[in-house]
Every structure is written in C-alpha cells, then in structure tokens.
Length: 392
Image 1: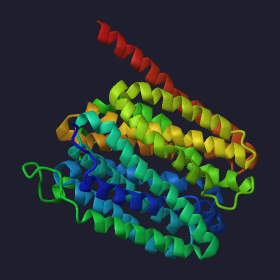
Image 2 (image 1 turned 90 degrees about the horizontal axis):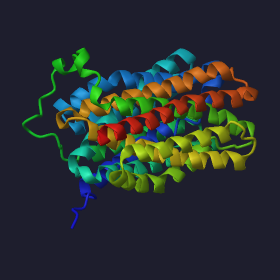
Image 3 (image 1 turned 180 degrees about the vertical axis):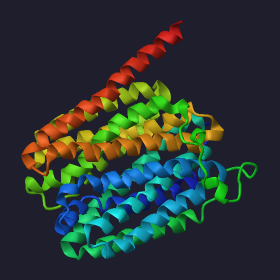
C-alpha cells in the first residue's frame, strides 16, 4: 500500500502557496492601465520584465540559502517581500518609483517557489514526484486564478489602493502559515545564516545537470511573458471589462490537467508529456493571434491553461530527477532562472513589434509562437538522442 503524500505539512504548504500566488498575480491585469495613467504606457513590457529580472538575479542566493539555511526561511522571506511591496505601491505614483518597486517585488518569486519546490521534494517519494508537483501546482494555479479575478472585482468596486492592501494581507496570511511549518532540511546540513551565505561564486549559480529543463522552460515561458503583458490590452479591445478574465479561464483549465499530467509523467517519462504540452501551447498562441471576440479568446485561454498545467509541474519534477539531492536548491534555482529569463524576454521583446498598437498584436503573438517552437524541436531531438543511447 502506497504511503499518502497528502500530509498536513503538504496541505499547509499548498495553502501558503495559494495565498502567495493570489497576492502578486491579482495585481498583474491592472498594472498596465495603472502605468498608462502615469504616462508610461509605452513601457508596459517592463512591468513583467523588471519583476522577473530581480527574481532571476536572486535565484542563486535563494538556491544556496535553501540548501544551507533551510526551506522555510527562504519561503517566508519571499512572502514577506510581497507583504511590504503591497503597502508601498500606493506611494509609487510616478513611473520611476513604480518601476523601482516592481524591481524589488521580484525578490518574492525569486525566493518563495525555490524553497517550496525543495520542500516538496523532501517530503514525497521520488516515484510520486510528478503527482505531488501537479497537486501543488493545482492549488497554486487556483491562487493564480483567484487573484486576478478578485483584483478585477476590487478595482471595479473600490479604489486601486484597496487592491494593493489586499495583496499585502494575503501575503501576511501566507507567512503566518509558513511560520508553523516544520523545517525539512536535516540538522546535519542546516547552518545558521551568515553574511558568507550571500557570497556567490560562479560554481554556485548554475547546476549544469538540469540544462535540458533550462532549454525547454526558457523557450516555453517566453510565451507566458508575452501573454501576461499583452492580453489585458487585447481583452479591453474586444470589450471585456474584467481584464483578469483570460487569467481566470486559463488557470481553471490547468487545474485538472496538472494532476493527470503529473501522474502520467511519473509512469511514462517527463519528455513525452512535455512534447504534448509544447504542441498545445503553440496552438493556444496561434488562436489568440487572431482572437477578435470573447469566444475565440476563451478557446485560447483553455489551451494555454492546459499547456501550462502540463509544462510547469513536470518541469519541476524533471529538475529534481536530474539533480543530486544535496544540490536541490541550486538545481531548482537554475530552473527558475531560465523561467524568469524567458518570461522577462517574452514580456519585453514582443513589445517592440507591438508598439502599443492593437493592430500589431497578431504579428506579436506569432513571433512568440515561433520562439516556443524551439522548445518543441529541442525536446523531439532530445528524446531521439536518448532513445539512441538507450539502444546502444
């Protein structure tokens, strides 16, 4: 009889992640218009790019601290950043302070998910890793759906500052849960925090064992950066009042598939399922490139959700599969560096095609689709090479 992976610690972690993802995702659909009102509409790509830049830069530190100091402190720090930033947004009423705050806010996702993935890997058996990552991703995905939907409702009925303060409150609840969780880093490996932990040499930045995941996650997350940056404008252009609609639909669509894809990858291999995820993502982008009404937008959102529901948890499980146990934090950080780099470039580069003009959206999305195709081609070649080696 299999031992249950759904322990109290696992559900506490899922609840904390739900609150964390709700906290910062509830802001995303509303920030482009907020920036435009400040006079910085042409810099919309920086909303996501600066956030992911900091997240990527902080990954080597969060990875090292996760392996040396502990999983729980790293997660708590990430949520703390969200808590503080939520209270500072109302004070950032001009473009430069706003972007400085977005840069700082990125530390949140630079820390919290790194510690979370390592924590899950610690408490579940290897043969159920994909399943557990899928379930956790399902709960986190609910937060990503709940956040934008709640944020859109708040902005429609209250001042936008209420949105920022609500974001802080959700982060605080996430922290309170984490403070009651048991640390999983062994006493033998755990060290007291010291300034030396913040010194990173080049060997502590990248775990080369997970490079296959890095390549796939970079090119697929490029599309995510494009969509979260430009879908609010597309939604508004076709008459949607709640700019969080697309995010709600795609996240709900990812819920069931996360669990199923995780279990499937445990049995049939990560690469096989990731190929399906890449194909689905390509079709989702192709459809949104020509979306002119809510129905077509919804179809794209569903396919996008399915693709993300496959790619996200399986990439995390694949990362843990490929790395050494003592380097889990570094390996997970490496994977997230690729994720944030992809999102950052995906948010920024397509805006040079878009030029803040709705009529340029089809070409913009098609460019993103071409980038995602690189991940699919790599996976097909990787599978073929792996199969050849196996037969030899």
